[in-house]
Length: 267
Image (cartoon, rainbow, N blue to C red; front, side, top):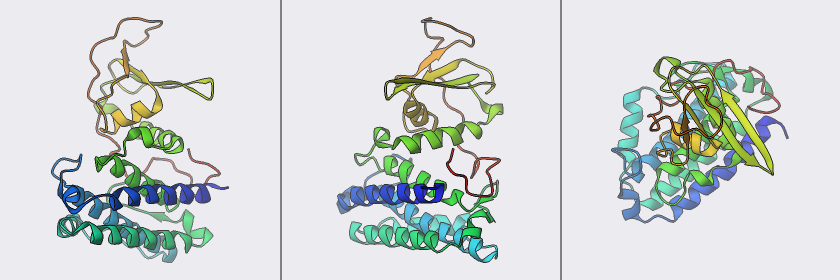
């Protein structure tokens, strides 16, 4: 299975999980606050549906070579979300399902060469079209958690965690960094895994498992269970102070330096 098949399979499963959660909500549930400040669950579901349609625009750009913006403007995007947020759950669910199906069909319809076409979102950098699959998975998985409806970070698939932590780190804003290193240390399949990102900035070292780190860095958790150490520490030294606030998360649309041709695997 190549990366396109793998990512589309992941996306289909992620979409099904999100649809199942939304199908279990009542109209009152949908009108309740989400975990994103200022947004109800209805705002969030509408946003994910309109995001699917916006990515269809980018697949059209990749297919035809004619530049097609993701959204006409920030204002039109926000207006569409506001307009759809108060709809009853039956309408929201149908919209979410139909928009996801349109996007899946658009992905299936891309000819092989179109996956290497460069497209752009609302923020830089431009990226090859195959990365749209990564971006859509980011939307479905993070916003599923943001619904606050029973799906949390512990449910994220391992492949998603690995990929998103990688992209978070390669997009790291060093000028705003409160830490010098991020250390992944965990046991997987009876094997100890350790990965270190160094030279991130000034401050302590933060260590933990990949899932907890991603949840903290993306603002989905307070980071309980992470360890704060002084730079260069060895052994079981006392904590080097409280866990700092993470820097702004994923300020870029795509990871820099992506290969134009879909790789065998990503990351």
